[in-house]
Length: 335
Image (cartoon, rainbow, N blue to C red; front, top):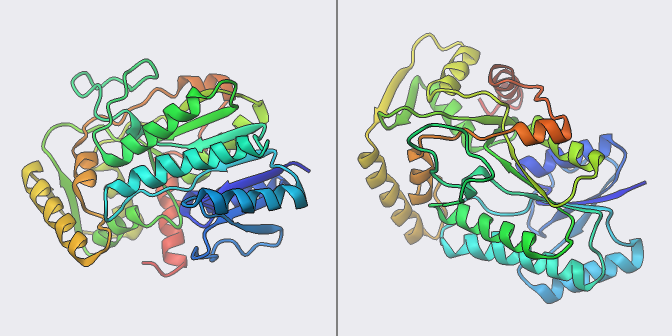
């Protein structure tokens, strides 16, 4: 039975990867922090492994103990990371440096897996092709304009710089589905009959449903690919209203007020929210990074390589994905 370690296993995407690995009968190790919620990690067969990526010595000791007792992992999915921080420097520390510590430790302990899967983001490319609205492609030069995107790009570049290291990198666009908290805020707002969007210029948005993303990861494992990076979306291109209109439909709301905010107003609000959050020692969903993400007008990406090389065919278009997501929010009484 092949063994797999999934870091960030308690998170939105990580918990779905854990469930699929169990279904495929892997020996599953869920990498978590001591403080991580175990709410979605209660199925029989999940073995928890507490890992402290911030302290290389502790990380090395824990992984060495695991190797002595159970051997190395056949596959590692590195899903751990942060998407919002109270201090922008934390993006670099967590998403880049801690990924580097982890890989360096695996190499030092002779624990390099058959495949090291890194969950990155389309944000590593930033606002490219904003004029022609053509899909972002591998040949484009990454130009991230957010601390989050830059930290992920630095991790990617380090991974790719290691000779012979068996990486596979996935760069998903907006990932949504059950358990996701940020898109839930949109659903919560629409339930209250208010939809908020920004900017007046055309915006092309793309999405990937979480179960499709997980399917792509395991297709990569099945195919045994190595030293490849893939963009990931459901292949559709949507307007800024598509997502909110589908949420409204699933909620059965007869009336929603659509408010379109000028970018300059959003920028001021974002900076103010970030300032207040910093004073309170907390992270804010609305911040300068989030402003730049919402400002970006083109989120199209070229998924031809993942379709041709892995045979990836999304099972969910946006309508089906939103329907399943809203049904889960209702079932779990989030809505």
